[in-house]
Image 1: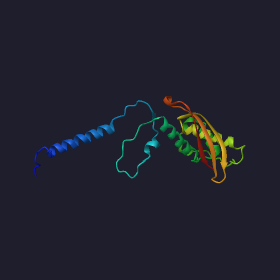
Image 2: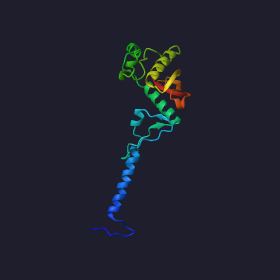
Image 3: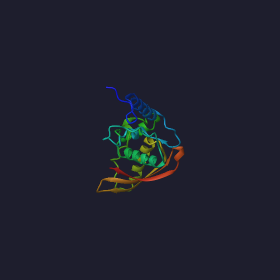
Image 4: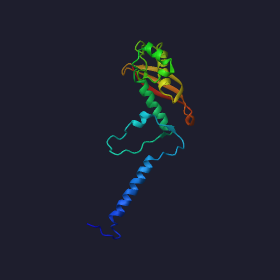
Length: 185
């Protein structure tokens, strides 16, 4: 059946051409490299998170964070680091982290074993804080001059409450940040 040409119903070939052009424009826009005006590159794990798992179609992911998003991303990553326990034993962790080429090893990711320290003992808190600083220094390259202060041990929840202070190492956003952190014991 041939479609009738009139002003209200364009021909099928015209409709097909419109759809084809629209599809081409959508793909061209999706594949185009965004113009980088400013921002911090988004880490791989942040790009892999599906914030809308119920939706079938995906919006092209952002490639750069603004300052606020960067700080949120850093806080999330520090939380992941400090609430993941390294598979390496304490002495093995120390030995492996002395060589820069070992710092990407999966078994080192996270906080070194600190079970020999007592979170309720204020004398042990600086040692735990030092372990936290080392782990952040290795696995969060967007931060420098990291300082961790263990504030208290929450007996009810078996967690350590800490304050993290550091300098953002990304040139466009260099500034000192401080944020609270809860570390599972």
